[in-house]
Amino acid sequence: MYNPHMPIRLLASDVSSQIAAGEVVERPASAVKELLENALDAGAKNISISILDAGRTLIEVADDGHGIPASELELAAARHATSKLVQSEDLFHIQTLGFRGEALASIGSVSRMTLTSRVESAQTGARLKVEGGISGKVEQVGAPVGTTVRVENLFYNVPARLKFLKTDTTEKRAIDSLITRYALAYPQTRFKLMDGKQIALQTAGDGDRRAILAALYGVETAKQMLEVMASEDSALHLSGFVSPTSLTRSNRREITFFINGRWVQEISLNSALLQAYHTLLMVGRYPLSVLFLEIPAEEVDVNVHPTKAEVRFKRQDQIFSFVQRSVKKALLAYTPVPTVSPQLWRARPPIEFTKREVGIDWSIAHDEGLLSVESDPLIVAPSEPVAEAPAPNQRSFSGGVPLLRLIGQIGATYLVAEGPDGLYLIDQHAAHERVLFEKLMAQRENKSIPSQSLLAPEVVTLPPHSAQALLAQLEFLNRFGFEVEEFGVNTFQVRALPTLFNGADPATALRALVEDFEEDESPLAAEVEAKLAARVCKRMAVKGGQTLTKEEQSALLLDLEACQAPRTCPHGRPTMIHLSVDALEKQFGRKGSR
Image (cartoon, rainbow, N blue to C red):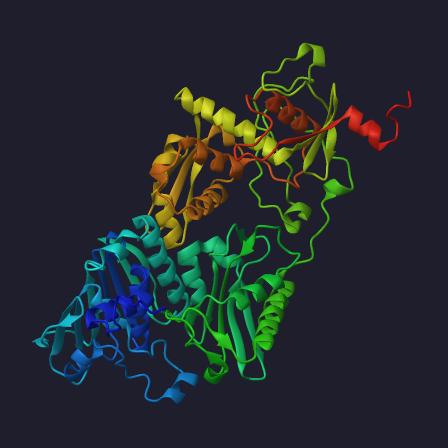
């Protein structure tokens, strides 16, 4: 709206440059993305990225691509200057990652940028310094073939933007995630990421995508990933990897799509992928995927978002259907028909239970896990024999629930118990969360959280962004009875677990905990220990859909009765529902009939 108190005038060039930069360079990872795509467009076979202070202090991207002639170096740092686009018609069949000519100008306007480059035909290289959008003179320097862009003090002249950056851990995670994805998309290019003096990521550049998956997620995860190869009408091609239904995450962060070599965050593609997994995954679980869609350039519009993260398809429905059918076909081709567990049709052999503690099952609940011949129900850790549940008049309680008599389990999820005032339905997962939480916090208060050393330490490899998240949590985990230490690049060694969680698979436990830690954008140190302990206990508790033996049901019920706050889990969800005798009589029409 027009303001009568202020005349209309042109913005100063530095202000308009910073506004444009805000659309392209939102955070350090945005700058890395633009520089990385420029290097790939230049045909680089080796790309080295160095960062300090999560990119705030330094971002340096060096490549061995074609380079920039000295005579064009100053023009390369100017706005709307590009070698990838000539006329407007070119926008509809773009073959390169960059095309607008805004990246270097935008980055240079909000940082102190040094651009050094040399083409193969030149004997020497050239260097240009840009500070706050103001270019210096081009200097002649010695340099290898290729281009190095050094970005220092990002947002130094835009303090408001600097103020709104997230924590170092979060910003590093964004950079790690970005480079991880491009390493998978361009396996023939060698990537090296340095965080200070530490190597965060390094790939061989030999074209083997599965080897990169192994470096990022660990060998076992890489071996499980299912390959997708599909074509349609000789114009659409889909390749890459998706996870089997037994390998899932608690969020969508590991769903990755590239279109013609460009990483995009396209809702329709994500929906097509999830539709392929429809009815195969539990609610709240998501697959891992790294998929590469090749499509004629004129069939997709990449010029619809400042960061080129979103696209539009000319044949949206056809693309959706193609991706959904291709992934579904791969899932059906690789997924074996589940076999029925002998436990479903024959009597279970007796198990000697020796301690009144519910064991831990770390498998994420899905159909295959529940029906596998080799899957074993909950095993109780040995200690002292389980006695018969005492009669109601011999038991006491302190947490506000009446003394309960176990009836059984329904739906492999809920315990049914009788109290003096009616029927109780108990959510076994929420109840076990509460039991573990109060035990863990009591041990913490007494400064005596016992640990159980593993016979053989478990080695776990994580993606770079997950490794960064875990590094920030090591102190907390070690205070709570875990013993986890670094064991190489993005690799950790689990040496001990709290005895309270005896029976958990160490590798799966650590991965699941990292998923929860990654969900949080706030600094860990600012959180209350109780909140973090609650998250750990949520992961360690028995799951819905897990069959418990009578002894385990009784043990869980007795432990819940002994809790100080047994009616809710640590996250506030109810552990039980009460159906009074009066309510039952009303339902059966018996009220007032006596």
